[in-house]
Image (cartoon, rainbow, N blue to C red; front, side):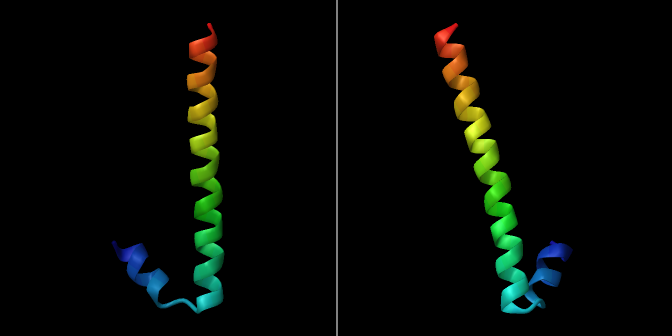
Length: 43
């Protein structure tokens, strides 16, 4: 929670950068999970 409070104090541009990075990591995880499930279904 402390990190979230610190993020709130950043500029809008800095916040947007953090959200973009988070979106990339979340997207990567979703893609990895989806591909893993597809490979399980094929096997």
